[in-house]
Length: 261
Length: 350
Image (cartoon, rainbow over all chains, first blue to last red; front, side, top):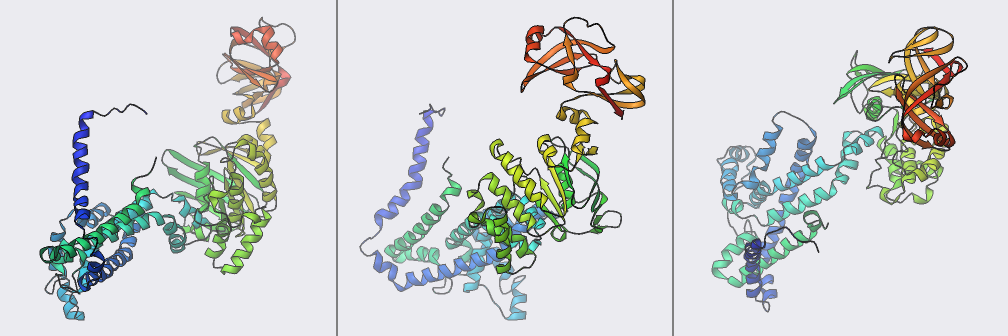
């Protein structure tokens, strides 16, 4: 073993940090009613929240992939004026308090909002307090994770593979489909996993923009929050499901985030 | 001439200004030091780098002309490219790599796979059709890359350092293989290398590129007999001087003069093979010959000969026997005299 060059004094706050981050999880597991958890998870409101969460989070991923991957390709491959500004704007939701995002969505897509009033008049579409609204709120918060991960993958990729495809007669579309996207598949997968995990846990923007209607917009994080006041065991069971999903994402991405030397 | 190109462009510190003509069926090797612009020239011919000035014409069809803005994009040029590190698509099998170009050009899946399989068989890799590139050895990857480029029947085949990524042991075998495959290709072939052995072994004609300029072109024999730059002289291992000839003598640009045979006038190159240089510890006497005074600087063993570098007014490299090195104590340095017969100096116009 090599002698480390780290002062021993750091061990104390470091241990505190581990404890601080881990003890809440232990608390959660300690209070879990393991005997009745099966019944809790099978209860209609939990199943309803779970179903809705899956619909909304996968919907948000679909929106994010459909719009975010083209955006990432443009940001990574095309030099256009204001590119850095566009990149900053599109990653803003990552640092914006989600509740602010919810307010902004309401002002834009609300019934009297900038885009909302036009949607309402032209198509009779209302987004707030609908499942589509919840999907929109989740996508707003989660898409940037996909965009920056995919853009980073595109930038790290050896672009000469695209040159090779061109010398073999492949146009831009064929090259994108058959070379570029397959080569950045790991980044795309990581981006989707991150985006999905973020969408699944989304709370602030959803409750602000889409409300908290059971069966319509009440996703799992919202259900946890409500259950906490009325039915602690249900809240714990729901939390456990979310924790398990987070762990699964972490395990799936471990090679990417914690490469073993 | 089937490929005629005039390429002018600047890329970073490189200023490329080269003219190139390759006949159908001819194998031209582009030889030059690292950073001379060889790869950039190939990329420009393939349309991967745009020209700033110049034109590229292949079999009479204009691929690019900055004069009238004509431009055929890479994917529509009848050009095959073998990249230095092959760039086989890592997510596709060897067979799918070879079939890629056929599929991209609109051929059906079954027919593309059939033709790709035939090509893999031709390069001796039928058994590896299903292998991913990372499971292939360097020599196998090189052959897949060659098959991938040739299966589309390009009119111009560009090869960028096709053997550089291989270790010395496999290189000889793959070179022999490559030579055979290239011989079977009836289009125009242009190969880039910085390895003189590879260049001499493969080329019908050499084009030497230095600092983005063509400094010499000719058959391997012509180039090695009459080098026209210090780089080429170094490669083929001869002493090269520039100077002005005035009948039987050449006044060297760096000072000093050489007595030569024949009658030459004006700017010339004078070359001396190291084996034609004799070394002495005292001023030699006798027949009219060139005697150059200097100091033994470095001694290198090359095969069964020893190359002795002499520094002085006229620097020269001599190739002598190990016995001579011992007798003359050349490894100790000190003053030496190098003698060269006038008949051993080759003079040709600069």
